[in-house]
Image 1 (tube, rainbow, N blue to C red):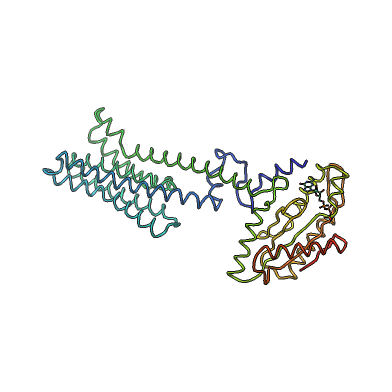
Image 2 (cartoon, rainbow, N blue to C red):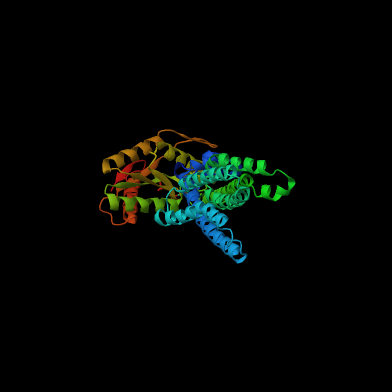
Length: 391
Ligand SMILES: Nc1nc2c(ncn2[C@@H]2O[C@H](COP(=O)(O)OP(=O)(O)OP(=O)(O)O)[C@@H](O)[C@H]2O)c(=O)[nH]1
């Protein structure tokens, strides 16, 4: 039973966040992933890194292409197509520059979506340009322009790793239009290579790459998250462990230092717990600890926190309370725990706790609040147990 409690609790994420079903990434819907605020932040930062890398790649590739064309002497006698190339490169160049500006100005911003919208816009313009060339009878230029469009689309669409699904519906009409025009020009097998680099195919490939990257990211993220959570969770009760409680205490202390207000620390300790272990065995003691964890969790408000401080001692952090409210909350816990027998494999056992309450008021460090709560707990024990004392 004790181990079952631990397993059950381990699946429950800290602070109510996280996975609702197992840890298998393959079965986790994107919807569920996006409901995790920390996953969203992770995905944004991944997309940003990828976008910056891809933007530099595009800039580099375009410069090299330009240089290559110059070295091969493709430019001199055909000013028209050369200008045309420059025009097709403009979307990628502008997008790349914009990525760099956004990355510098809004490091945490949600900008891959506007980025993909801009790209979609440029692709549509390009598609209409192709139509104009076709209608004007400039097939050669149109073919070359299409190749430029391929480069632009492939390179820049990878930027939209987060918005691949947004990108496709925007780009597809323009790309399909380009494909139909190409087909109508020369549908023979000699165009196989052109088809292989066809923008439609290229965009689908880019979307698949983006999806694979997304899945890889999600898997790595969930694995890390699990490691992080198990490092902060007490394996027996599933409550935050001492390290997690310590972090929460420091955060609460910093918050009241900055914004004012108070928090309270309640130290709760099972009464005569040694007797439970000695009489019924350690496994039954574990069951009692598990049940205590469940009752603490059930009684607390969403922004309060209960964690296992060590052994049979639990620390409860109450946010935004005065001394009176903290005392009332502690009393409610005491009554809830002592008022109902604990069902264990050894039968129904009476269990009580003693509680010590301290308010953060005037404490320079969180440790001082904890020490005062400890002193109050000692007082409650000395006073006869199953009671609450305040310091
Ligand atoms: N089953 C179980 N027992 C634990 C665990 N951690 C600590 N304990 C036991 O908790 C008991 C604490 O005993 P004491 O410190 O004497 O406290 P107490 O018997 O509760 O007495 P008071 O606190 O004075 O009311 C010891 O028997 C420990 O072995 C645990 O994870 N599981």
